Structures are given as C-alpha cells and as structure tokens.
Length: 543
Ligand code: ADP
Image (cartoon, rainbow, N blue to C red; front, side):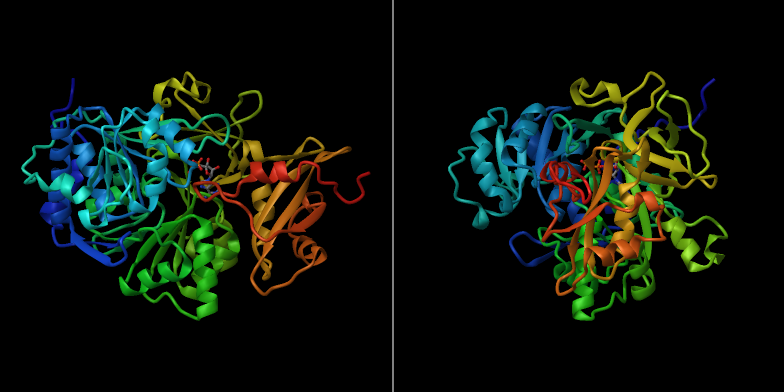
C-alpha cells in the first residue's frame, strides 16, 4: 500500500520559483566581469531565467540536451542554470582553468549544443569553436557593447539572446529523476568523467546541506560562494541560498585576498566557502593589511584538507567559525561536515580542534564504510585505514556514457579513491588519495597529516609531501615547502618543528624549498606533477 501524499517532483526550478515568491527582494550582488558591481534580486533573476528558457526553446534545444557554461560565479551564470534546467535541458559546467584542448574534449564528449561563456574566456572560445560543430550558438555572458570581436560566426551577446522573450514560459513538467546538471571530474587518471546530477539529487542535497547542524544557512545570511559553480555545483550554495532566501554575493573573476576581503566587508557577508588555497591568500592579505572580519560568522573549507593552523587562525584571531567539509563531484558534492557534536564545545579548545581538523561526520543520506585490501569492512576505531566507499541518493551510480564503471560495485557502493579512518563518534579522517599514499616498509604514511603540521610552522605558506623511491624502504617522504614572503627557515627548523608531533618514522627524509607549488583546476596541489619533477630525487644517505 502506498502512502496518500502528493507526488510533488523535486525539481530545481521550484527553488527559484519559491525564492521569487517569498524572497523576491533578497539580493544577488555580482562583481561583474565587465568591472562594476551589479545588483539584482531573486524576483528579477527568476524572470530572466524564464527568458533564458524561452530563448533556448526558440533555438530548438530539446529536453536532455546539454548546454555548457564556461563562467565565473555571477548572477547571469545562475540565471542560465535555472533557465536551462527549467526547460528540461542539462546545464554542463566546464572548468575554465583546464587547457583549451581539454575543454574542447569535454564539450565534444558531452555533445554540448550551446555554450555560454564569460568574456574572460574569449581567447579559448576563438581557439576551440571550429572544433565544436555540434554547438549551435556561442553566447557571451555580456551585453552588445561588450561583445568580443572575434571570428566566430555563431556568436551572440547574452542580453540580446534573452531580450526577445517576455518571460512567459511554463517550466517543463519533468520526472524528478531527469538529468539536470553535468560536471566532469578533473580526471587525474585517464580522461575526465562526467557526473550527471538529477533534479532530485540537487534538491535533496540542498535540503540536507542547509540544515542547522550542516551548513546552517538561513534567510538572514549573506552567502559568498567563492567555490566556483564549475567546481561541483558550488557545493550546493547556488540552490540552497535561494531555497532559504539568503542573499548571494558572487565574486566573478577576482578571487585574490584583497578582492575577497573587500566583498566580505562591503556586502557584510556572513557565510562563505572555498578551498584552502583561497583562504591562504585571504589570511596573508589580512595579516599584511591588519584588516579584520567583523561580519563573517562561518567559513566552509573543503576540497583539500584544512590545515589545523588555518582553522585555528580563523577561529581565534578573527572569531569566525570554521566548518571543515569533505566531498566529491560524484557526491553533489557534500559528504561530511566537521561540525561539533553536542557537548564537544565544552572540551578544551585544542581538543575541539582535534575534531575540527578531521573531515567531519556524514550528512543524512550519506552512507560511509571503510574497506580493507581483501574487501572486508574495517572497524570504526579511529585508527584502522581503509578505502572509503559511499552510497546515497545524491551520489553517482555511474558516469556519463558508462565510463569508469569499476568504481561502482554491485551493492551500489561508490569507491571514492580516498583512504580514511572512521572513529566511534562518526568522524571521518582522510589519510590520503589512494594514489598519493606513501608506502614505507609496507606501512602507510599520511601525507596530509605531515603537510598540516608543516604549514603550522610560522614561516611556511604551503607544503606538499610525496613519496620518493628508497632502496630499503621502497618509498620515503619528501617535504616540499613554499615559504611565506619575507620569512626564512632551514631544513632543520622544519624537521625540528615536526619532531615529537608525529611518529619518528613519518618524519620526512628531506625538505626542499620551492617558490611555488602548482595547483589543479580545482585548487588541489598537483602531486602527480611533483612526483614527476622529483622522480629522480636522491634522498640524503642514499647512494
Ligand atoms: P576533482 O577531483 O575534480 O579535483 P573533487 O572536488 O571531486 O574534484 O575532488 C574530490 C576529492 O578531493 C576527494 O575525493 C578528496 O580526495 C579531496 N578532498 C575534498 N575535500 C577534502 C578535505 N576536506 N580533506 C581532504 N581531502 C579532500
């Protein structure tokens, strides 16, 4: 017997309709790509989203077809998402930090039919347009006055594209399981793989993630998603902010410490989210300028491990609560959040930090388990490592066009490729990406833990630990560090700093100082490149 409740499909455009009706005057403020700040409201944005849908419909875009975006976080980008999804097509976010040939590869693989782009990426479009015959129209997210003068015949300015419509467009009645969004993971091994979100998975993730013990976003918040919309759905913020009626501040192309600080201050942002490298820039700017963060209440740090020193600085020096988050593109993307359990706030602060530095507890709808080499489930004792597998309604069950099928097992678990521990309280700690784990004498060393400690040295800005070949131990850790501007430290200073804080056999065999460390398109340290660069590195004492 079924229940007698209504079948009200969970569709993302219902979010923007709700916002337009009940939070019509709440604002979306954008640092526009053209330069000036641009202000709009959910009421206006919802109307313009319908104009996008109308224009795509006129162009002949059909349900299920992919419409790409190559764009920063802006109100226009958000309008395209809701317009595309609401007319039954699939928004496909492409990461503009990828190489042009990778962008072209992804757009062909996805069979994109339209491509919206910010004028910052005009050169890329000019380079790849001819390789993408399936794309009917390239739409520059600007007005006619700023339309780039390039030799792409099927090019139009966004404001012209939507101008013909009046916004009188009925959203399509879709099955909630219909495809809604597409995002390719960076594919550090093999080609990028497409994660295809459904309307249902996006709505469910937003409902769960906005909860009080999760991101805790309310209508009284002003949210600055620095995490790009092209990086795994901006961690759900593009849906959950309108859902609750929070103001949105969209940073556009400028993500440096100074520009972010200015937005936090002038727009009185209360909550923001980004990867650690962005926070590194902001904290360095604050230190140099002496500025404070009077309005900001919460900052979400994820995508890579949040170092303990970073969490502590935000909380004790600037009075901003840190929520450490772990997730993946394949998980919509949130998996765990490091909020404290009841009673933990009574613990001495260093003990609280022990929990905050872990990657956190699963949201409702995220099942976690650890699996050993033989496939057996590992104990949740906070010590035993295992490969982390996940299952849930906002987690991928396959990749677009059947790629990468080996990551999914017959019981529906997805292998994250992360190695982790789980403790009795449900907190998960990432040891490493499986491919980054350092195996020394048959035992594992966590590069993340050593990196975290290294950056707590006052002179170290950023650190990466990789395994380097060793004739006796197979691999030994090498620490590669970038010093803060104007600061000095020696190999011995760094090793002394680590000494006593980790097992003796985890202490790196050597320290190398470099001017900078390269990051991936999603802001992670490029360990693959470092491993290549240091492949022939001779550790001290090795002949
Ligand atoms: P991409 O793989 O495209 O760079 P994802 O965001 O999907 O982008 O990457 C997910 C991976 O990022 C996770 O599997 C994990 O290895 C790493 N990661 C994400 N958040 C954290 C975190 N808080 N701590 C450590 N690693 C993290």
